[in-house]
Image 1 (cartoon, one colour):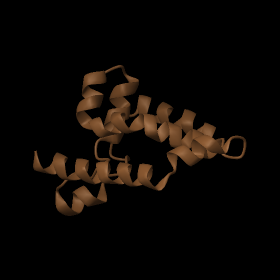
Image 2: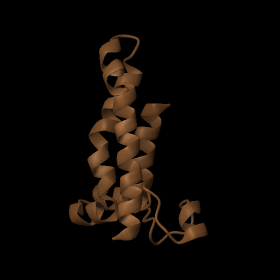
Image 3: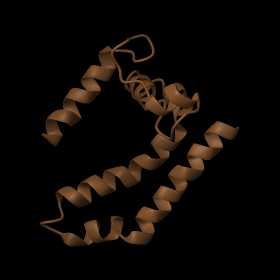
Image 4: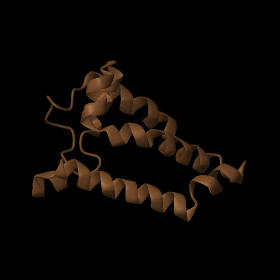
Length: 114
């Protein structure tokens, strides 16, 4: 299931430009408030990244690209937790998760103030 999503999702976003299509999900927080949530721009960033437009992908949501190593480690730790518990223990420690949550909140504030 995870593998299928990992192949299908990039294929969809390669061929469909979310900034020009009506079907991609719109951010409910932005629709209600006019402000951007921490993940606003992720769909456009993925589309730009898949087309090799690195600067444009970065401009849509830099926090996504800064978060990617942690997200990959978190997913790998979860998938491999039955074989080797050490990675999962490291990435799921309370202080690590709380640090990431604080960074998300700071990003949410900064992107709407600047």
